[in-house]
Length: 295
Image: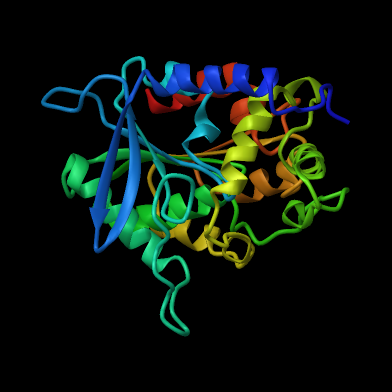
């Protein structure tokens, strides 16, 4: 059980204020590519001659840029940080459906890449990261785009191994009223995303609530279809593969061991005390490890 009961008044207002404080540190950029508007947020110093390599981070399924809320300030201190709402999520348009028999991720990758190139220039080297569904998306995007200096993945989907779910998810959309809907969302947050009861706070709930209501892309089937290993092998280069020790979407220790075996360019990390959403639950350790990896 969570350590609080979410309501729609004081806790929600305080959580929104915390989110708005971080959002105000950046600038919003709505960029259209092939008729799909993609919302990007930029934090940190402006890109330009002599600037450090831009860092692009992709959120998870049923997510938004706010999946990185506790990482923005640390990671943007010296880097230009670009956080999209991927097509089909939160403030961005939904991508068109893939052609029958085509790649279901293709239209999303097209809009993501086209809009990013308009912001920073095609072929501009970047460091790239992704969380959960965004991990697989980042790996696929890296292969497609190229010009990737370093890749970091957090609780990535697409690994093709068994999940460790011990609690059934609840269909919050079927709830008869808002109180039942909030209860279902809170249950799912605890069952899937976070391990430590103390981490399930009003801000985490607000991020989850907003993102779930703004999700229109079906990511689960893509994440469970595999493809991560092939993308990583094709890409090469320095890779940081990170999971929380209690991540229920995988069995992290043997998975990390198998992914880094015989691959000196890969660094595997399991963060103790963290569940799936490790960059939120153990933000300080996550930020430290990522900054060290990025150099």
